[in-house]
Structures are given as structure tokens and as C-alpha cells.
Length: 398
Ligand code: GLY
Image (tube, rainbow, N blue to C red; front, top):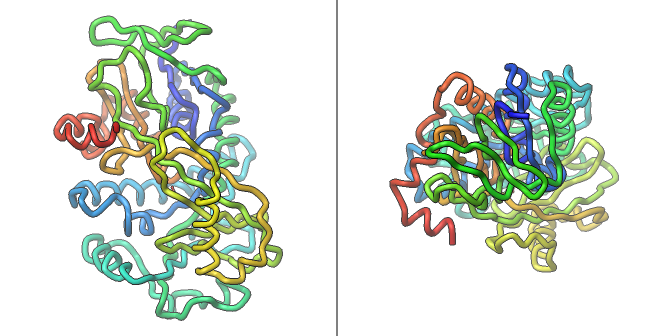
């Protein structure tokens, strides 16, 4: 069997790209080293939060043009989620529990994020307002904002002028997103090979001819690398085709809180608290440069619970129901890597760092356009950008 496209990596990015390509008639195979969607896609909290992310990421040292391109991409993808959720529901019957203003939602939560300010945040927010005038912030005391009593059905824990209400931000239930994409691609005939990591590729001239592991050698006309934190590890590729990806671990704790008192996401510089439809609260997340280690540690749990209970003291009465860690695929500048490579038939869609769930719809569209119509994603996201700054790349690979 020779596939039109072989996708390395079955996280939400690989699955969504597979869906779009197969919908357009391509014969697609996905190779996943474990179980589809059970790495970063499973570990995530599912926030769709470009404004919150842009307060602190990418770092200020990253050029303004890149930051602006990143904000634009994140914003575009968030806005695509309503149609994406509806399309997945129609294709699979799975509701991905999108909580986003303007999308029908039948639960007790209120879409939006309450961003609780701390010393130092005012400057970041002022910078965002100035540089991205289109982004909407509503001060929590303004008439458009819901009062804290409706966001937090128990007692308010911040004063009105200590927070911003961001009504356009939202969330999805990322594990449902994984299940929906898995079912959707099965229905359109994508071949899914789980527990099959691609260890190396066979190269002839400037083309990949096949993907190789201990089970098989598979011929593919095109190859799309979506292996998240593992994207830099494929043997046989020239160095300039390997994206400079570094795993950045994040730990999350799940709480159960009986009275559904937190009705919106609460976000601060030190943690976020994400209410799920089923009553769980996710407390995330650490940022740890510890290689491929993804343990839940005493230090991580202490840090998260300390930050969460400082933010919302009433959480100290909640029960802890679960905890986990995942590996974000980090890049030297914090932007994803999307598009063509120096090999004629190798494409990349990886390095989504903190925004893999958010960027899933737009990435799938951009990569389908790239493979099928030869339309390149914006240059700010190209692999080529790292050729221009080798020092940054080396730092990213360390
Ligand atoms: N998107 C939030 C995180 O990566 O922790």
C-alpha cells in the first residue's frame, strides 16, 4: 500500500490534519507511538485563550511582528471553533463541550475568562491593548461584564478592579476532542497505526520514499510531521529538516468541587482554574524544562495548589480526584512550525507549545491548503525562520 500522506504523530494536530486531507480525497495513514491523542492532547486543559496567552507568551524578547502573527493565528483558530465543534458533532455525535460566546451551550458555565491581576500584569495588559487594539478586554466592573456573583456563585474572592473579564475566551473538553477526531478520521477511511512509532525515514535525493519502524516500511507520496515533543527525533532526516523542539512539561491537578461555584475560567500569572461541565476543576499548569520526564511531583503539586488556594481560598475544601503531566512541544520563539521543509515532500505541523488545542482547527486548514493547493502558511511560522537564527535553535535543542 502506498499512501498519499503519511502522518507521523496522532495528537490532535495530526488527527485534524488527517481529517481535512482525507475529506479532500487523500489516502492518509497516521502513525502514533502510543495511543492516539494520549500525550499533550490528553494532558491539556483545553483553554481557547489567545488574550491570556499573549500576556506572557511568547516572551517579550520575541519580535513584535512574530507576536502579532501568533496572536492573529490564535484568534483566527478560536473563532473557527464554533463551526469545527458543530462539524465534529454532525460527523460523530460527540459533543466536545465547547464553551465559547456565540455557541449554543447547555450547561451551567459562563464562557469567558476572569483574569485576576497581580503586580506586573498591568504593564503586560497595557502593552496588549496598545499593540492589539482589536482585542477586547472588559474591565470586570464595567456594565458589559457579568458581576462576580454570577461567575462565582459562592463569595467573590477578588475586588472588581483587581480583575479583567475577557468574554471572548473559552474552552473545549480536549479528551472529547481527541475521541471525536479519532472517530471522524476512522469514518473517512484514515488508516490509524497505534503503538507504532516511526523511527526513521528512507531518503532518496531530496525526497522521503518511506517511513520505517520495526513493524513495517510504508511508502508515502507526502509526509507530514506532527509528532509534538518528539518531532526532533526522526532518524534519517537532514538536520535542517528537524524542527528544534524541546519538551516543556506541565502538571495539572483535577479537583471536585460539589457546588459548581466557579462558573468561568479563572486565570492568573501563577495558575489557571478551568471548570468542566461535569463539575471537575482543572488546576494548571507547571512549566518545566526537564527533558522527557513527566512525573507529577511534590514540588509541582505544592506550587499549583498554593497558587490556586491563594487565588480562591475556598478551594481548600475541594477533593483532589486526579493529577497528571504532559509534554508541550516548545520552540525557541514559542511559535509553532508550519509548512514545507527543505525536503520536497516533507511538511511539518508541530511546536504548538501551550496552544495545541487552540490552534487545531487553523493548523488543519493551513496544512491541508499547503499539501493540496501549495499555499504556504505565513512565513512567521516557517521552519526556515530558524536557519536565520542558529544560536536560538541551538539553545532550543539543548
Ligand atoms: N495552554 C496552557 C498550558 O499549556 O498550560
